[in-house]
Image 1 (cartoon, helix red, strand yellow):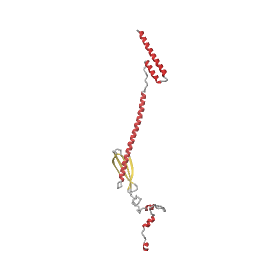
Image 2 (tube, one colour):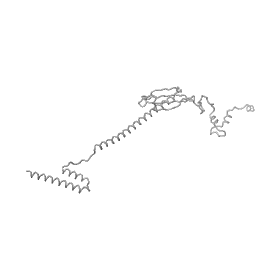
Image 3 (cartoon, helix red, strand yellow):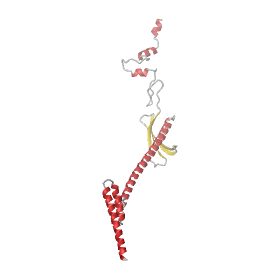
Image 4 (cartoon, one colour):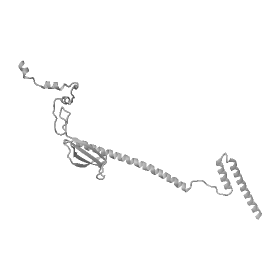
Length: 233
């Protein structure tokens, strides 16, 4: 009973050895021209010899390193997008605040009377948001001119902050008809016929512009006839 069993084991061992030899021969013969067949032949030989085939893949450390690199890249992209959106929002709010300041300055300039020297503040709505403007009026060295400083901030912003500010002036001096000189200090200039201001600023010996008569000729035309000329007639 033991002889047939031993003969059968020897036969199976010989079969496995022949398969393993055949796989090694195929791997050696085709390894140069087809490198991929070497791995197939080796796997076939290992299966024929009863050993498990080796599987190649990423290790846990390699997978974790790849995930860390991807996470860092995504964080940089998200930060750049968030910064761009924040800058766009800031520029929009700053532009609207500048418009609010310009509107208040224009409204003040269109008043008939100069603004009082004081600090005033109020809220206004624009672009679906509440804004608070603060206007400070101060006197300049020129009596008829006042300086206007306006700062604008969101209504929910803390006191003392400013998103946009402008400076303008309100002047009450007006040039009299027929003159380009403005009475800044309250002293009205002498008003004469058209052209006299230009003649007064003209250098000696300079020819008058076309259409303007010399100052001497205008004075002669304005002088009344003398009594001697009337008595002679």
